[in-house]
Image 1 (cartoon, rainbow, N blue to C red):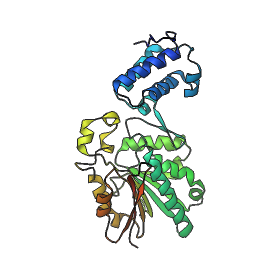
Image 2: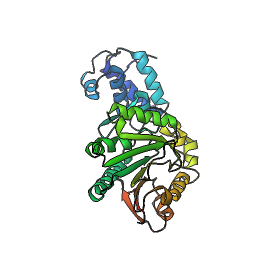
Image 3: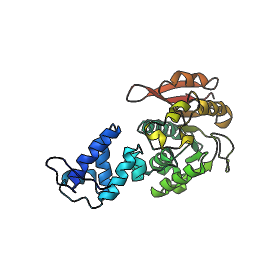
Image 4: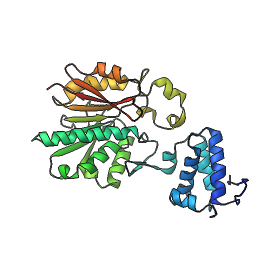
Length: 302
């Protein structure tokens, strides 16, 4: 339905009126970022940046009915990234839809750790380094690594593999890689964790993985974006560790001796995941900005 402003000082049918009313509606729906959501949706619908929306409150809202539709989707809990079709992550525009999880800020920490590990290997090892992004989803980790290590990839010093059990997620990853010009630099394979793949990759020296780690009960509750994102990419079993257990059990056979493994985990999972690491491996934790264990760093025995 059309968005109409009844706010003092606002002219009905303008950007400013729509912003005021949309913020109120989203706040009532429970959005913790109602004002920001309204600004982003208006920017999306008008084809302008947020700064333009804020600078032109008296401009007419050209498509009030269409704006009302997307506002209703957000009020129902659908993530902004799915409504707009993209997410800005590490200054990259990532295509997003229900085929894969929306990239989180926490995962930026994971890719930074991965880049550090790959750089160390490239400096140390004479042989080409193989990095494997397990459960790639939208492909953001492989994409960021490919952009960062373009020279090493061109020289054949590095190979990047990205896998997922979901063919639909792999299609989305392929779209994101192509959109940023690195489709030829990443090998995509359909595989269940480190299990058999359609195109068997070499054993990796660096593994980065963001596996499902949300407990089943929390996924069932369907709060916020969990009601819209793919269950396959969220549900980590009763305690959130089912996929992580299988993954860690595969490491001795699936990775090279001395491989570096980087795994994003849920809050409170640090001790449990450390206890599951393969025998002889060294384990350390990387904390996020909130001071929570977020990345498990595992170095397998040589």
